[in-house]
Amino acid sequence: MMRYLRAISKNRLHGAAVLRLDFNTEDKWRMESVVPTLRLLLHVKAKIVIVSHRGRPKGKKRALSLRNDAKALGGILKRKVQFIPHFRFSEINRMVALAAPESVFVLENIRFLKGEYDNNPKLARQLASLGDYYINDAFAASHRDDASVDAITRYLPSYGGLEFEREIEHLSRVMRRPRRPLVMVFGGGKAHDKLKVMRFFKGKADTFLVGGAPANTILRILGINIGDSVVDPHPGMAIREIIKFKNVILPIDYLVREKKILDVGQKTVRHFSKYLARARTVIWNGPMGFIEDGRYRKGTLALARAIVRNRKAFTVVGGGETVMFLKKYGLDRKFSFISTGGGAMLQFLSGEKLPGIEALKRTNPQRN
Image 1 (tube, rainbow, N blue to C red):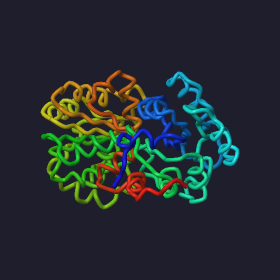
Image 2: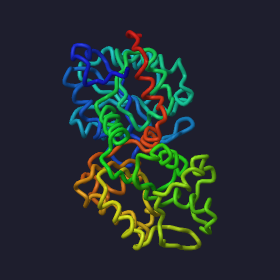
Image 3: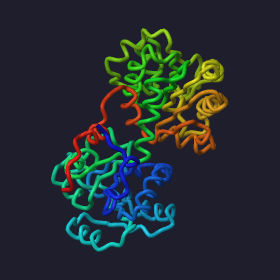
Image 4: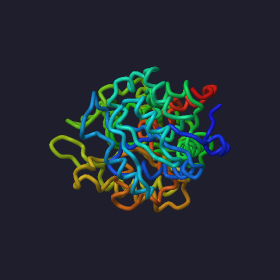
């Protein structure tokens, strides 16, 4: 059974916490989401050793250093945060041991080490040696079986953080007991992952509104000419079931340039908006168009506004690209819940097990 930080007595939180976070976004929104966990640990005078990542580097890459993230976190917390630019663990151990209570450390990008990707036990033990217990508040990274997400839980008492718990609570709610009608909106890339979610929600969702690469992929399977538009070359077996669904609504007009579908048209926006206005639960992941270009943002923006106009619905959005788009237009705070996960959110909603969640369900070991 998974244990959460919120339920642990304060006297068991003394000492040092190894805290897994996810700084892998363009701005500080994921960092800000875990402030409650950080505040709780500081309140009980714990030392905090933060493990995080950026990108998927192979070896050390200066552009993906967490040095600036440590500075940004210090600004948010209004306290000194010490950045550790190396992985000399015996030296880090001494630093943490000699540090005062409420000290905060940020390790360099853990993905600079190959052992992280390999779920290496030796690296996991080295990370575990830095603290008395482990907290995962990186839901967005919990679909990875990395050393700092999975293997580390074999060597320390381990708990889900406050934001991690919110993720599980809200996503479980829309899976188990959504208010109907339930409308799911999918766009962007990762068609394979989104098609798996659609298959899982067969019989649970009332309507699927589909744009972007998932729509293009379905259209191609149906034999419709989509020119050079982006598709998923390996959509998986789920697509064979989904093309038979009666409640999949595809775009009816597009903005096309150089034989590529780059956005949905106004007729599609009006058509999709009718379903969104009647919804009582909306789950959204992925933009409708190529939003990197300002000319192809109108469809996504119009649908975002249609979703937030429906104040009777419980609205959930996830995926870094989608959330960043909403923040740009000040619409993010109008959603009921913003998931910090992209791939992790999709994997959870498809009914699959996430390594980071399964790791926290293990019988907790005593301190290493």
